[in-house]
Image (tube, one colour):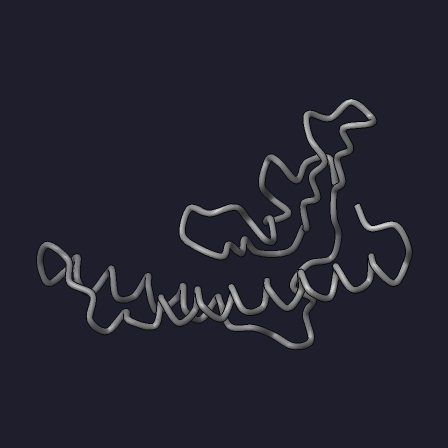
Length: 113
């Protein structure tokens, strides 16, 4: 874990930059909603509508922080490993199914926050 305030702030800034880049990538990947194809015309329209909503939800609002808290686990205090989880209003991951950069505040893992 970072030792002094400067290192902590630098680490948080780097994490914020990485989280914003990942959110941008998530939005770009959902932008292909116009080419989505379902099993029939009804499911195609439903799928396109859901993907369009998803893309809109991933819009970055500069007035809203991407994360507003964090949970730290320390092995020295009994945790299985040293881990830091950033808590925000949406889930952000660097890749589909990957480790979260920002965890949704409603997720069970966020309960201690």
